[in-house]
Image (cartoon, rainbow, N blue to C red; front, side, top):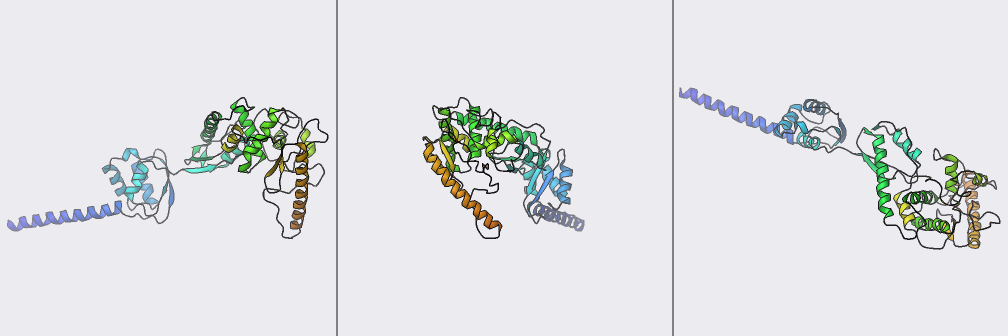
Length: 375
C-alpha cells in the first residue's frame, strides 16, 4: 500500500514538473523572440476572427504556433478587440507583442505629399494613380480648395475621403490665417487671398521672396495697376489640366480670358493652382515696400524695382544673362561642359515672340501707365 502511495505521489510530482516545464517552454515561445527575420507588412482583413488571424500569422512565419497566439488572446481577454488593418511587424517580434500590437490597433500609416502649386486636376491624377487606395475620384474639386502638405492614410482608404481631408485642411488653415492678416489689405475676402496666393505660388519658388512678390501684387492692386502675371495666362490656356509644354509667347498675352491679367484688371475670377501655407501667409502679411516690378536675376530669384526706368535696366541685364545662358546651353548640347544657372530651364525658341521667362515683368511698348509684360 505504501509502495502504491509512493508511486502515486511520485507520479503526481512528475506530472507537475512536466507541466511546469511545458508551461515554461510555452511562455518562452509566447514571450520570446519570434521566427520573423526581417521587417514585414501584413494585412489583417476586415471581419477576420481570432482563429483566422492566428492561422495567417503562423502560415506567414510571424509566430511559432497559432495555439499560443490563440491561448494568449483568450487569457488576456482581447479576443474581441483585434483590429483589422495593415501592420508593420518588426523582426523577431514575440507573439505577445504582436498580439498587443493588433489588439491596440497600432496600424501602419502610409503617406503621400502634395506639392505646393499643383492644379486640382494634377492632384486628382496623383490620387487616382495610387494603387494602395480604394474608390475613384470622378469630380475635380475647385481650384485652390485643397491644402498641399503631407497626408497619412491606411491601406485601402477611400480616395474621396482623402480629398475631403485636404479640403478641410485648406478651410481650417485659411480661417486661422485670415484672422492674423495685416490691416488695410486690398483683399476683401479669404477667397481673394487664395486667388492672389495662387499667383504668388506660381511666380516664385524662392521662399525668401514670397512676401516681397506678394507685396508687389498688392501694391499694384492698390493703385489699379494690372497684375500682368504670366502664370495667369498659362492657366487661361491650359485650365490647369496639363502643362503648357512650351515657352509662353508674346502673342499668348492677348488671349481673351478673365484669367488673363494682362487684359483684365484686378484678380482673376478664381485661383490658378492650390497654394501652400507659406504663400497664403505671404499674401496676408506681405513685405511692406514700394516695388511695382520684378524680373528674373539669372540665379533662380528676382530683382525688384519701384519705377519703370530701373525696371527697364533690370530687364536689359536679364536679357544679357539669358543670352549667355542660352549660349552655354548650346555649347552643352554640343558636348562642351557648361552649366546653366540654377532655377532656369533654357528650352525654347529664340523667336522675338518668345516670352520665355514667366517670372519677368517688362513694360509693353509706350505704355500709358507702368505695366509689365514678358520680355
